Length: 229
Image (cartoon, rainbow, N blue to C red; front, top):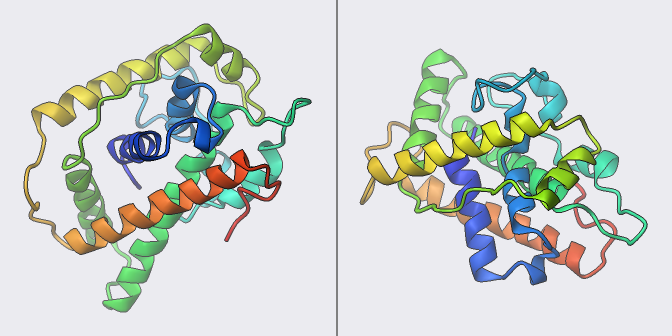
């Protein structure tokens, strides 16, 4: 799955290239947190989270070899507008996370099929190693801050309870990732084991455009902005 380096890099690129207003984002910190939220209660990225929620419930996919989350199902169930016709920035970020997970894993599965690579433990390890390498080639700097507005949106998150203690734990985890990304940054083209630089360059662009298209449609008032495609 894409690392938090990758999720954050997508959010930063979208905010830099298009700006929050054009994406319908009112609170950047809540959006950034949403880009991490589906992973928080799985327990791997935030090992000190207060409880665990099964991956199939946070990502709308069975945790098989390379799962492809059903972001459209999340949209239909939880991205409903409030009385003002708005969707929370936390939900927008979570949708973006699931789109990225779906698209990266869909492209990886297509790559495996095209190259006759069989699903096995060795393939999974090489795949995740390549994802980790790619994440360290990206420049990231943003960490979601815990503000009153962020906590308000967490308290109203429609899918499951998001506790304040876990919001702070998530921020600490992301701070460590940003520091580690700077200290262990990979310059130039990494020595990928399997997927390759072309795979990541094209997929990064495609995922960014997919998320942008959905959020721009939301900002324009399209009620079907987050549907599966």
